[in-house]
Amino acid sequence: EKKKKMDGEKEKSLLEQPLKIDDEEENCEKFTCEEALNEIGFGRAQIPLFMMTGLCWIADAMEMILLSFIGPALECEMNLTDFETSHLTTVVFIGMMIGAVFFGMVADRWGRKIGLSSACIFTGIFGVVCGFVNTYTQVLICRTLVGFGIGGGHLAFSLLMELLPLKYRGSAGILVCFFWSFGAMIEAGLAWIIMPTLGWRWLVVLSASPLLLFLFLFPITPESPRFLMTHSPEKAQAFLESLARKNGTKLPRGKLEIGKLEIESPNLEKSTENFFLTISRKLGLNDLLRPELRRLTLSLWAMWFICSFSYYGTVLISTKLYTQEEEGKRCNYFSPTGSTGETKNICAPLTSDNYRDVFITTLGELPGIVITMLSVEKIGRKKTIAWECFATA
Image (cartoon, rainbow, N blue to C red; front, side, top):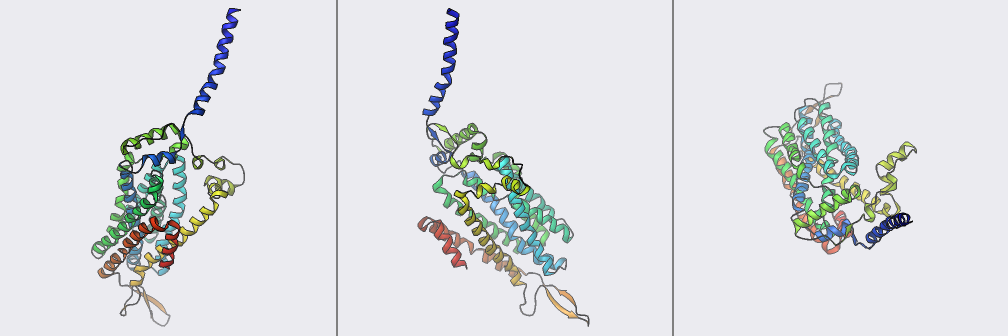
């Protein structure tokens, strides 16, 4: 009887123990990743990532502005038609469209750090290779693969935003645009110096070289705490604590919990339904088009389309304007020869003055960024976008 009594008391204590732990966990203070970042603030912990994001944007800008220079050069060297020249730009954007989806999936599956670093290294390798090819088809393949890698370059911006407190995201996002403009200025300056003497191959290789630095920057690239939160909350909290120590701040009291927007959606579960629905779920389109996010998603898609169409259209047509008829000369002037109406390509490549003019026009982005940075804090993001788009139009 004594043994039965002792066994009964032991079983009773074991049954009560989990309840006691649950009560303690229920009464424990909790905080989200967003609240932690707001307490950490902006400081020494985020500055290295800010500079790495800037480097990535400089390199991506150089690769994009490069398109406006190699088109006229290859048109003359390989005797291309306007239709063939236009493909040099088109394939880059096709690659970007596919690469953005691919590297986005990589970032969600294996982390922003791996997605960003692999995209930059991929772009750098094929950018350098492009400088050593000899045929038009080889150039198209290389530029397509370069565009594929550039599609993942925007992960740098995403990673930076996921490490910043809410009140700094607007101004930091605009400051990053300085790096894009700086990259455009560097590319225009390099073209001004290199193209008239060394040619387009040297420009292509030098433009891609900065991206290869990510081979050495990978070990010190931080991971997104939001990604860590959905895979290992313990690692996320430890990482946030290290950020707080570097900034001389402290995390909120309690335990880190998954916030509303960090909960992994059931739409990402495996599906046996039709192919297109399965692909839609794997890409996360169902999550982006949830009722609470649908309006925001569609608005952002529309704004990105309009801004990209206008910006790249304006930038890429700049050099084409210089190759149009001016004082009886233009780069792609076809004159009839013979009775059959056959044509001959009379080519006059861009001059040093043309490259200088492109460099000067790229400086126009700088005051635009300053105005944007000031107006965002005064009248807000929505009105700033609306008025600047209207003024640009």
